[in-house]
Image 1 (cartoon, rainbow, N blue to C red):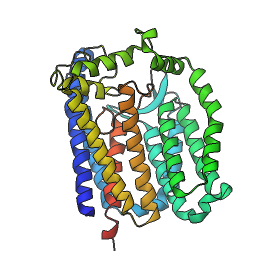
Image 2: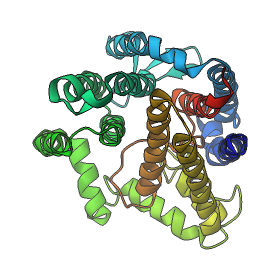
Image 3: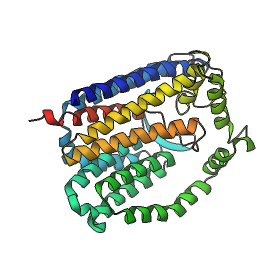
Image 4: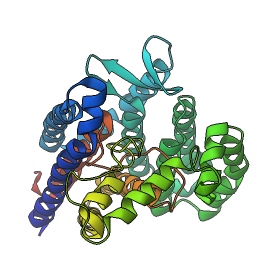
Length: 364
């Protein structure tokens, strides 16, 4: 049974990555030719990212994942150091006012992706060590919240509110399932509302995104442009789509067509059936992930798998919700499908770890 779950998880992720390869070329080739005089520019880079992701996923599959418990704190400290380092002018690459990436020749690395994985590993180890003490405020609740707070603060300095909120949601899910008192979690959520309000409405571009989400037609050529073009793309696809490669919105109408809004291009070219197929694949992936969680006998593996599945599920839900104008624009990629280096690589590492966790019973 466990072997079938692992095979199903792998096949689902493999299909999503293959769809991503096809759709990235379809969505980016004309833009890539216009900007770089190479229609295969983004496709070639994505293939490099996939090769790196496969190698790291294989490595994470081959080692005993329980060894990560001894490395949980060092990994977290290294990720925090990288989050500080990326803010240093000349080291971190700044794009559109955000300093989130390290650039190594043709490869960009986003340390917030590693930090998210590091927090999940640290929290899984922390919960496994604390046991029933997780219900205690000072011993069980405060330490992981402080770790989250430091990580979130550094990510917000980039700035990146979307990743911060997704990571916070995963941490809260893990703590809730671990048995942390609900009053602690609810109190913290309520206390964070004023800070969240200030973070959103004191920054012009975030306030514009919220206003555009509520009514994109108030500013159709400004803040509401992406949402409107995304809806046009999805609506133009109909049931069967206009045909692979025949999208009109990718012709410089829909910004970030091969990254944040690739789901909209899928909807335009492959129609409702294509988008439903993507949604079903993610449901299958999450379902298999939940089966792995259910069948994991050790506490560390249980919560590590929970965190990994929750992160991928949240990113997929948010990305699809943004494309369908059900959520404000957040800038989170669609797992396995969107163009991107560190995000894709860490998603593939997550698959390797989940398959590793599913092998728990095979270890002596």
